[in-house]
Amino acid sequence: DVIILIWILFTATVLTVNVLLLVLMIRHTPKSFANFGIVMKFHVVSDLQTIIAAAVVMNRTVTIDNAFVYIAYGPCKWVSSTFCFQSYGLMTMGGSMTLYIVLVSFIVRLQIMRNRKPSDRSIIILLSMLSFPVPTAILVLFLSSRSEDSIMINILQEHLPEYADRDAMIYGIADVRIPTMASALAMMIVAIIPLYFVILHLRSMIIKCLNDAGSFLSDKTKAMHSQFVKMLTLQCVVPPAVFVLTMVPNELKYYDAVRHPLVEAMINIVR
Image (cartoon, rainbow, N blue to C red; front, side):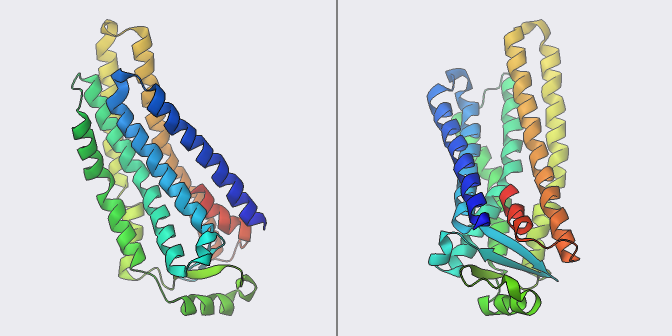
């Protein structure tokens, strides 16, 4: 009951903030920033999709040896375990898209700083080319890694019988070392490292453009561009921070150092 309450409060808060943010963007984005607003709106819509998918599942992740056992308390349990697994996959895909959208944000921001205002069409193409391929591949690999529900229930009952909650949906992956899941994890963790180097390079180029502009830009315009750079930089910090916040508890659970339902739920909430 506590886990469900935490999920409801978290979902209601984040969903409200993102919906309000989207409404404000649609109604009050200045025409001069309309094209960059496309990226920002896309980011919010992606976040909304991730939040809704997470709320449908309300998951706990239990690591047992090399297995990922998922325990769902959300409305998906009234449909099927397949629906729960697919919803969790969409949540994972949405989370993995964040950094790629930030990359597009930096590219568009740099083009604007260089007075090469990109067209709406080119921004949409850029978002499609950079934001979807890797996260979509992660989703496909993740969905291909699913084990039979009976296997996951047996794993849970054998190691943690007190966790076999009949009011929840139990499903998951019996061995994350299989090629499909190992590839998905590698793409989520290893593949993003080069992105950070590209983003840092783009950030330095934007700052250089700001410095070179000098007196050509008003103080208000320079301050606005600087705020955008700070905002995008903070967005870059979020994925590794989330990774640490989720990986550390997972490792502790793997070695049975920490084992608590709230910790298992929070891993999915902060993601």
